[in-house]
Length: 221
Ligand SMILES: *[C@@H]1O[C@H](CO)[C@@H](O)[C@H](O)[C@H]1NC(C)=O
Ligand SMILES: *[C@@H]1O[C@H](CO)[C@@H](O)[C@H](O)[C@H]1NC(C)=O
Ligand SMILES: *[C@@H]1O[C@H](CO)[C@@H](O)[C@H](O)[C@H]1NC(C)=O
Ligand SMILES: *[C@@H]1O[C@H](CO)[C@@H](O)[C@H](O)[C@H]1NC(C)=O
Image 1: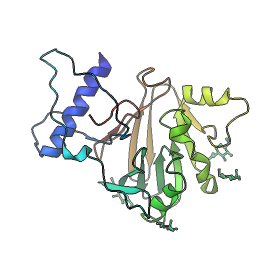
Image 2: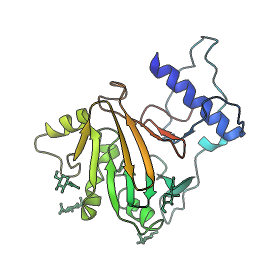
Image 3: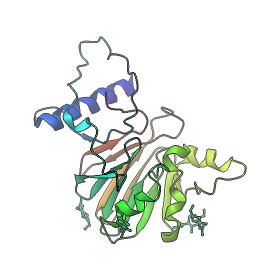
């Protein structure tokens, strides 16, 4: 039930964002990941739960074929990167860049996306969850020796791989419940509400920019 409520709040929030309605309660901007089409069943019949129509902000973006990726500016130093199927986010702070997820399909292009946005090094990596299709590009950042942050469950599962996956280095910082990343002028709230997409998958929220991310759970449509 908690998840359904969160879902409806987030979907309402997209509607508020697109329509520019300041009165929609609890507005958030939402990074909706994976343009992979999924069949989502109709919402619950409870009349208390209302879904706003999806805004044009969730339409797919045009990706320059010579670049192979698109960078969206969500404001306040938060950027969204997509290759058309996978998405991730990075936050430029006054003290280096925080990267959230490193999908291997985007791969080294993520270095270009960040390098063409800021000269600052990547100092933090956040793993949303352990799946290689979302974090399997992590070792590309090994030259700047970022501090890697993930839920303890994510670390535990990565640590039991035999052999360990060199593409997904073990995190340096782990936590059980909530953890707030403060880097320079940026804040990213990480919270765990129990297994959802998989054990360890984090709810992530940048309060200054009102950007919420819940990977592999919140999709367009
Ligand atoms: C933080 O600093 C970066 C780099 O100067 C800037 O791009 C971004 O807008 C700032 N964000 C906030 C929330 O202050
Ligand atoms: C900017 O992006 C281009 C590819 O579009 C890449 O060749 C170049 O290395 C990038 N610059 C930086 C500083 O990352
Ligand atoms: C860093 O990662 C790259 C790409 O995965 C790999 O080729 C390289 O060996 C790694 N370097 C170190 C020092 O781990
Ligand atoms: C993070 O842990 C790795 C080993 O897993 C270590 O090589 C690296 O120096 C650590 N980074 C920081 C910033 O502590």
